[in-house]
Length: 454
Image (tube, rainbow, N blue to C red; front, side, top):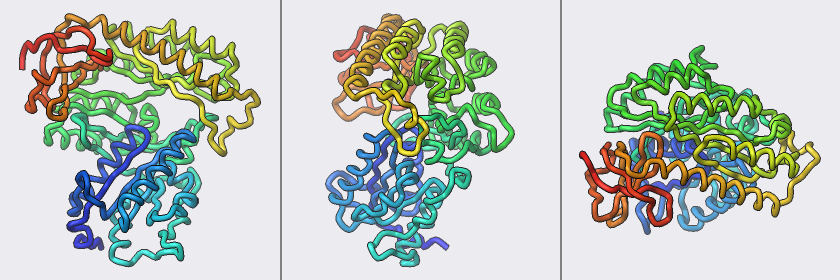
């Protein structure tokens, strides 16, 4: 039985690192706690509860997690500190030994956050001699034992809602620890996700982003398919836009591309992980496709949706990426009709099979390769944006700080800027037709040249 009185009047601080899925989950945690009577701290206030949702995709991410924990403990003396997320799952014992941490929740336990807090605040949760909650036994679970699914459909501080449709991954790429952190692929039913989207629509939501670890793998738990989910969500009244956060190329079916091209609400916007444009490196990574399949998917998207925004994940400096392999990647990416590259350097992850690959790329080379790809990305993005100067488009605007420019996105994810002089609070979460002008000062958006309809 949960003691709700233990939550009343408490103030919470939240900190999230990592992917959109983490941000969605943190937002859901915040809503759950708000429903129990916990409010979010304001600037200058001290928290009674600190919740840190961690990432472990790179060594840098691990370091940032530790920094965040230390900072929140230092700035909120006496607060009850909870750490969850991938770093908490993979390094539970390390996290539990950080001074000030009270509760460490792995992938199986985070769905029961409220229950654990209730027991802790009512004195029913056993503490170790160090003052840390003794839940280590929960974190020493095998990947196959991570089975819980924590639903999440939350807006947080943004206009867009993020709907968690899937968790876990069965791929076990050689460089990645995500399956160990989040378990095997699993998902709720299409019907339950449609119900969450309908609730978001009733709350005034206009746009929903589908999130997960490997969302194209949707259906393994329920015998449904990702296309089934897309077709069902497309019928949800009130939601004007759906976006697919990231989709593995081998799971991006021709059927799905065709459906999105003619759908009511699924936007011409795709984010597809490539990781390497070298077939040699893709084999070393144990990826499930080659460059020929990837290029074919890009062509098919552009044939069906010529204006589609296509983002691509690419990793540089992984083990086995010789200079020749990197040049293959660069030339391959340059040849593709894609819009933006999400470039990140390879980071050694303990326990991964990539550590057995003998060829190692030094940090200086990684930085130089990243720089070249980021310059290529900027060139492609600006070229894509330039095509829309002077066009009339529909933009969903997001709330801006008072006196600052408002920003929003077109259906195909072109970022748009509305000057402070023209911005209005009532434009937040509003779809508006505008004419696009030239680039803004830092060339990260196109300026509004005229509001045609409101």
